[in-house]
Image 1 (cartoon, helix red, strand yellow):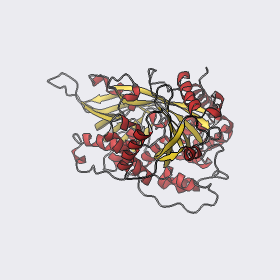
Image 2 (image 1 turned 45 degrees about the vertical axis):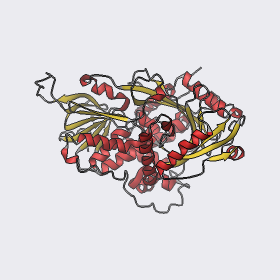
Image 3 (image 1 turned 180 degrees about the vertical axis):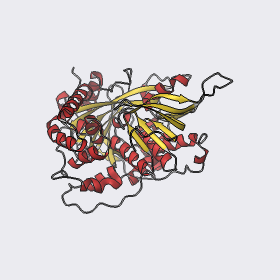
Image 4 (image 1 turned 45 degrees about the horizontal axis):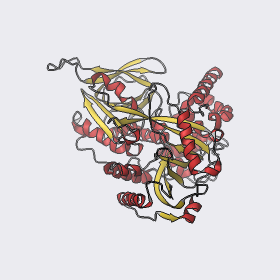
Length: 525
């Protein structure tokens, strides 16, 4: 579909191209609705490319008594592990049992027993001091009595969004990036009782690339903009209901913090959970949980205080490694859409999702990456009050359709076949077939093959260099300097596939490096 072809009327327009919006588009399109998704920046630009990248049941939510949320998350995690192998992968977590550390052994094992029961699993969780030290080398041993090990899962969050959008398009859904919702359109009728304007009946859009405006009509508009939701709904809302919370992360080389298990620990300063885990050839450390007071129109970035906070957790858990700023490859920060209940401690706020239907605008916000299918179906259940044909069509379905196995490829690095099939589904074979000479090899320091960059430039709506390096691939947070050393080779791919002139490339490179320096580097002391 052309970026300019919005003339037809839609059943549903979804505003927001993160995992929530993508999930709603998929569930609507597979049920026969004429559904359009628009995103003012790039797909997964906001929270959905900056999460902790964990598909988890939320073990810590048990402590808050959020059993329903935990059960829901565990069930969705199991579905994704089965349906998206290679994109959603099992990850074991180790938690040291130290003298005086809370939660203690008995409490933790009780929580794991509940966790297992929810997932329909059962396994050994406690290991002796010697066994645990072997499972998690480099951890502090002073006061170590043993440790607990449990299973969760991890993913590439941005690629998960893109895979869901790919699936939605196969069912007829339409998604467009760099298309901003400037204003809601309203019916001409005025409510006689309140004197308010009529219900929302569409959206005025502005193309962020050409500046062209479009008026799009729809039977229902869904606001799935996450932390930005109040900006769209505020004119017809009686109260602001969101509390933007920032979660920041460090990225270290795998050789500098080598981990076979993910390490779960409680921060020595405030007892908050912090993780360090292997991911895509690097080690991620996160996360913070602080109120985000910056302008939401600006890209989020880690603060110096957050950087020091995470380093302090590493010093406590891995004292002999003496990790410093110089060991950090990159940083990233995202803003979570958390429902504001007025709690003093941001970490105590619920991670459950919420929905409001106000004058024809359905707002969906909050929730977790793991439960995007549940959130989408809940949104469509409420949408059915306006789209009655949905009422008998909301039985949950597998997120992804089964895809045929790839042909044998001796040049593909070990493990890449399943990895590519998980990320690209039915397009994985075509991606491999499109590879040019030496493009099935991995980019040094990552698990990404060069052919993924060519495929993304050719088929995945790349409009800017940052789209390619921060979301279609994750090179921007896996390599020092955002991958500056390999930009000459990336230039040749972009110029071939996107038709960028030398001047256009120079402008894109300068913009990308400035963005990386401001928002993905280590803040100065």
